Length: 418
Image (cartoon, rainbow, N blue to C red):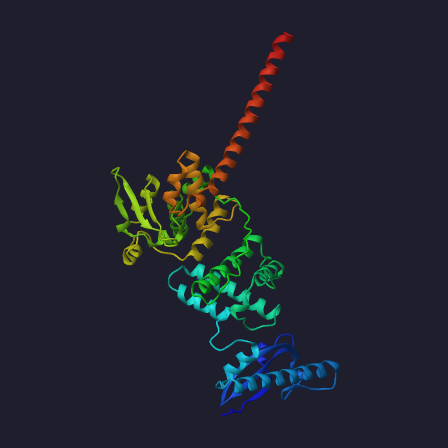
């Protein structure tokens, strides 16, 4: 039984920008609608009753193009009829766009992936997946002229083209163009999404099979002894900054991340095999167990907040604060202390790995355990930082020795003249 349908070309005034509006093809079947963008814009003043008004070259070209699209939608309708498939607005739209019934698409896969992750990872990480999804959608729309793409059409070329798009992307707001590692992070998230499709057998071949990510290893930002001491001893006169400073310094002496510090409860503090206080917890990000002996300064901060009402109400060691506000206050702290570095809470974790532990001779294997790294390779990035510190120290030593040798030569010359 044939089902009647209608198509109409419409514009959305809600998307009006600089006098231009995007044109959509609207398919209506049994009172239900589905729309897709035809990737054209028109002056709102020149649009009327489903066509572009006037007899200009632009109007004739656009109206002719819409007639071609209308004919192609009708061809898709006849194919569905020939296959004996039910006619729906969404089904006809998908048939026109080349998406088969029940076929998995990339944007559908991303929605599935994100729904599976929701509630299992931090909002900051989840937000990054939404950002990648936005770039994929824009890539499909601007470069491939598609609203979505079937998974079976994903290929190595698709991945490379997406990478090229990201590298050439020019932001319209205050953001800078993407650096190499930012591009690779988006590619990495796409790879994790397609891995889900491979595991579910929605994809026969992994489009990333021949692709190799090209991350550039950057030195991790950290505080040296003088900078850490400046923050520890500074009197701010503001309770909120004192509070944030204590949380930051606590992380500098334990290596715990923001989310792990905020989750600590009195039950996470135990007496270790050496009779001293230890932190016993599990990293939220990796689910790796973490065992950290409490250094005196970290223990002092715990005791300072033992009777804090807000912490007691939340059942945590410390009163909680959002990561966004915490990092905002850390910028103020950096200014107060004259530290010309971008201070974020994660800098504390790096400071623990370098200035507090590795620089003081703690073996890298021990540091890796305390940081909760699944592999020691992750910790080895800090070794390069420590080597840089050794190089800087030796440079100072060379200058001292050179100055001493010059002084001895000068003194010797003075004696010989006498």
